[in-house]
Amino acid sequence: MISRMLAEATFITTDMLGKACALGTAILWGLAVVLFKMTGERTPPLSLNLYKNAVGIVLLFATLAIMIAIDPTEGRVLQEHPGDLCILALSGVIGIAIADTIFFYALNLIGVGLISIVDCAYSPFVILFAAALLCEQLALPHYVGAGLIVVGVFVASRHKLPVGRTRGQIVFGMSLAVVAVSMMAFGIVIAKPIIEGMSLVWATTVRMVGGTVFLALFALLGRNWRTHWHIFKPTPHWRIALPASVLGTYICMILWVAGFKYTNASVAGVLNQTSVVFAAVFAVFLIREEFGPRKIAALSLSLTGVIIVTLDDVFTQWCNEALAFILRT
Image 1 (tube, rainbow, N blue to C red):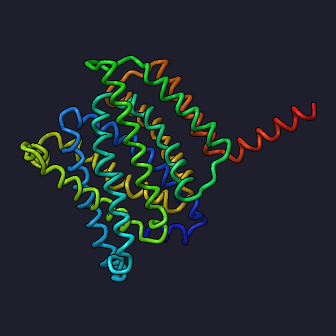
Image 2: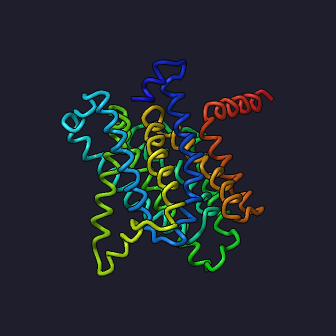
Image 3: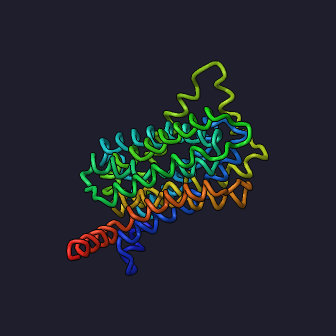
């Protein structure tokens, strides 16, 4: 509702709004990742995912209550889109419950710096799924950019090991991170056609509820199921976990879905990818992670790929002009 009002009341187009939301997601998610890393050092991945999702749901429900109080017609979504709601819930199970839990586990293994590099695989996965499921066209710049991003991942895999981690743990952690980002990409792409025709907050809430219900049921399995819920007992850890959850699960989630709602999925995915820069920078200042030459090289390769994909029209024009010049000479 708010985003629609902004688009109608100003010169901002929906495409510009979508790109701004995608870039805003990257900035805030970069900070949230570092805060989650600080929290994850004391909290198991499944517990942290349950906590952040619970915070997000409370805030989303509060937002919906305000929206319905202002405009009662907002409450008709549950009656008008039953089939779409099921797909959104499935999207949440894949992209929130499963993917985020795997992501947090990988984050604990390899740290913010390395996971920021692996996270560069996100945009190629979005482009791939968007082409396969939404028939979005892939061009030469997409392939070139994706190739540079993959090279960046391989360069990062030979980075100096975090303290207390073996080479095998690093490889395993990076593999898990790739699986996580691929599931995040798939989850949001399958939901894009529905998100485009539904209220932004409703779509975000349904995805969140679907993912959280699945995660909560899974957390009840096993003998030690009570340990997953200890995080809901107030502790000093909440000083970091709570702001991280507000940023990563409420604000970022709405902005993330808005980016895919208002602009091309491939473009939104690539702009989201700039979170690797912000996460690496925030990690240097907040948790004193090393930012050595190899990481700089890996980030440079990955971000070059991101820029090429973003400016695909410009890159294609340059290639055509270069080819025409070669042929003339």
